[in-house]
Length: 95
Image (cartoon, rainbow, N blue to C red):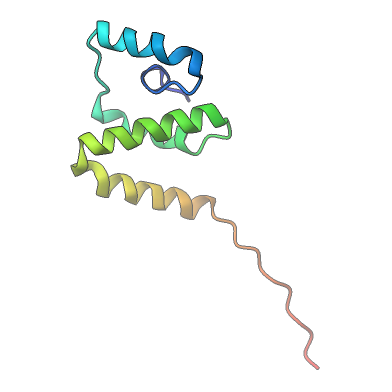
């Protein structure tokens, strides 16, 4: 699921950067720190522009809210463990 706040605040397409920045400035918008955990699903998205936008947003959110770093890192580690696939090597026959 993509979050419009993330997509508009941290556009990855150069053509949208100026418009997005002006819109956020003119409307005096701020990213809500509560979306940090919600960004995690987007950080591991298969879609590059969503993954990149979410990672940039999460980075900036954590810079502004360092108290959320530990819980977010814990959630990232849990996601990593869930997605980690360890291939078992075939056993060599005993001689």
